[in-house]
Amino acid sequence: MAEPATAYTESSNLRNPQGEPAPTRSYVAMILSAILPGLGQLYLGQFLKGFIIFLIFASAFGIFYLNSMPVTEWRDLVRFKPIPKAETTTNNTEDSEKHLGYAIHIWTFDDGEKLMYRPSWKLKISGSIQGILCWLYAIGDGWRGRRRRHQR
Image (cartoon, rainbow, N blue to C red; front, top):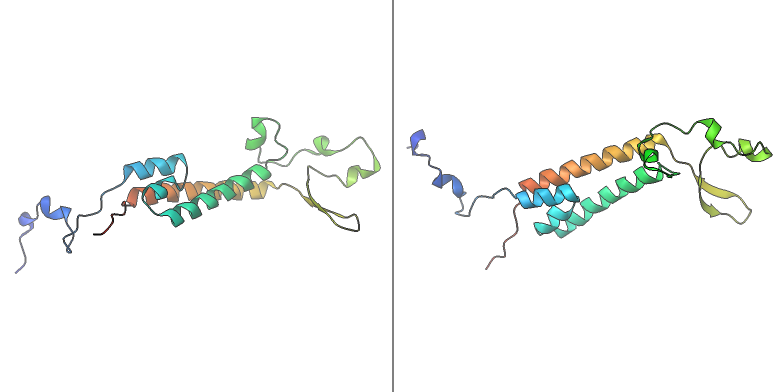
């Protein structure tokens, strides 16, 4: 026979069917994840998950920063438009057509060709979205998490 709805008490809510205490929200892990994604997971004892979340967030930050180059002031980090052509030309030399914008030299091949990386505002936006989503996931996961207890 089913128990009446009035028999449901607060004390019966504190334990699950196996008799273990119900998981409690971890506000400390949530705050740590808000400071730096992955810290809350480390606090909860989920070391691999915390390391992976931190790597994802760090790669998002790296993508955002590299696509903000050249960074000379803080306004360069919030610029989501390509650099105007007036800022990218060199002193009216023959090579001015080859240097259409800022580029990062990565490698020089044996035949003298250079491998260059040119920042893109599209990658900057995708890095921003990746970082925000990773940050929100880490906060939510920290809030839902429960600290591991060693079994005796």
